Length: 481
Ligand SMILES: Cc1ncc(COP(=O)(O)O)c(C=O)c1O
Image 1 (cartoon, rainbow, N blue to C red):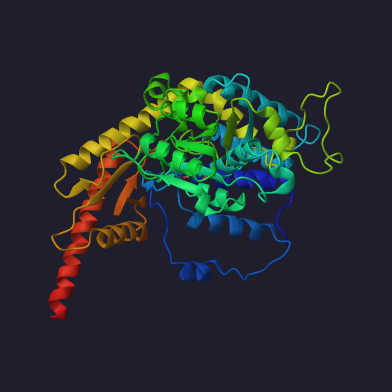
Image 2: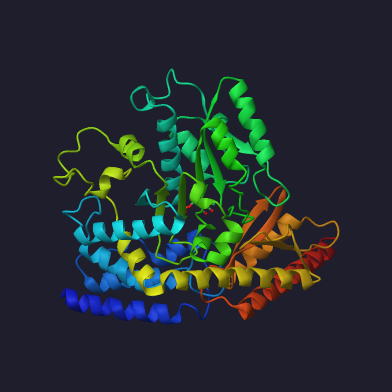
């Protein structure tokens, strides 16, 4: 007999599963780890029982069973963790109504919520005359900012492409996110036109090196059109100062973008903003992710432009859109899809709106301040440990450290093995990245279930795992002699 297909019963069944998952996700193992091959066998993906609702729940249960519990205190891997509950309810509701936020007529409430949220963010950042949009993440926001800058610098580019235009050059911190390489590729610039500017000992873009690179490009007949200050680099968490870039912008006329995907949420805390992001309001555009530090469900991003509504609209307007978009009789913008890269748009506004209403600026500020305090705590513990060392001093939210290997042993290989062992045991998942030539654990804690005790336990596990791996390797060497 086929199980009940009444939607209400199905939702109740799902609610029970979801509730249990959420209740338990911070306890037990972080993940029931299996290699891809083992997992494929366990899942038995070939299995088929069409039309059976119990089967649907079988797959949902399997999905949850092998999911990485991102709200677990051992989840220290990425810039996001479990989703905030208000926004998660919004995300589920948005999926329920299954519509596209490209037009008012298909998503009336989402459109107004998005406009409301964007105007709040524009005011908060200090772009009161600006324009914004929710995009599919900071990678795409960075690309859109670069595209707007490109079309502003070369007005003929939209029609003629990059053929017969002056050679355009973009400039970023040498440790900027890889999305800029992708953007340079997609926008037809080519990687040779993305200049990676040297960093100082803090991982911040050196403004003297930038000035030199700009002068060099101009002297060779090129046109600098875009500079990005990163607010929180991916591995080190460095903030590029904006102030020294302002006179250079005056001189060269480039578009000054700020990539705050990771560290941008310091804007919620006046104290942290004045410390990490002074002069942000003078940048031309700014992006940050609600789905990273603020904790909204993935994906949830805003791109804000200080002015440039016209350039954005002009850049993105394409072909005959009359079949879909409507303007108000007074000509004002009604459909957000006209400013978007894609046609269909997920409703991301509902979750961000609910999180914003529930936590408010104060709640987000407290969260960001707490994550910074936890990073400081973690750094202190690393410094006090005889078995651990900082690979570079902490700049903000990122703690780049490693287990100290015995003399003569390769640190990168040992630390990679420590990470893999902790993952396979279902205990910890932690980021690993290069700082210059050194491989480091990148400990970040945008996870509301992480506290000082969780950090102590994690660092203790790194040390214990490191020691047992070293002992195992020594024992293996002895037996092979
Ligand atoms: C500094 C920085 N910029 C951009 C991105 C890309 O963000 P998204 O994952 O939203 O595309 C990241 C992601 O880690 C990042 O660290």
